[in-house]
Image (tube, rainbow, N blue to C red; front, side, top):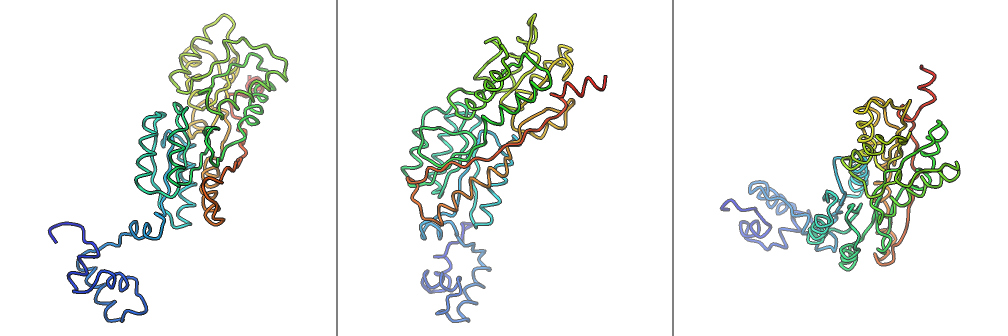
Length: 347
């Protein structure tokens, strides 16, 4: 067969019967004799024929494939979310195509185009830090492809979404710092145009207001999602004559940067500086001192997002009619980096 992939028409030509008849035989159709079924299947094995399930699914009006786009697959939260999505897809006999944007709007758009061309039935997306325009997300919907945003999302897009209780979780985390006696709690945030980071900031501010604390405006910094930027910001703040005595960050990678700066400056954590992050990345409990964080329940969130799609199929709801919001409650994980009272007891 000249080294090319064997298709059903090659089988039909070899056997001298129609392709449609070969298809019925391969599927053991009751109207095809047992002898013909055995002959066709034997020839398929001999020629190394593989059934093209993708083409077959498309003929039935579905690719049985879901696309997932995340900023980074090597972060624990997103890898856990993907694991949850994959588990649900497997249970529902669907395949998964995984893309990452690397926080780039351009790469995100390319991934969306790729998934549209792959004829996926649904795209689950956690948008990049650069994404502000809804145009490409709306293009997904215009192609009659289900769109579900999870974790990070744009309010301006009419789609279902699965998120954490970000505002409440941040509020509780900052309260934990205040209860430990920290009074000058700095904030390192994310892109201001993304709702989840606005909510985390709101939770921080609510806790500060309730405790009647006066925080200098330069202690509150937005648009600083990367570890590198967090390192620069915390270095500048911790070298002040009156530095912060704690940091609440919207990601664990920012918290890790703050911890490394504190160590380089000889500042004891948690005795002199408290640190509280967000996402409960795997490294947070492995380093010393272990980092306090907010567990976003990534796998549960991913499973919820995928199940939302399969429920939509069952209910036969058109994509333009789906605008549901599911909330996954986070868990506050208190570790050594914010336990000033325990550190005092040990002394």
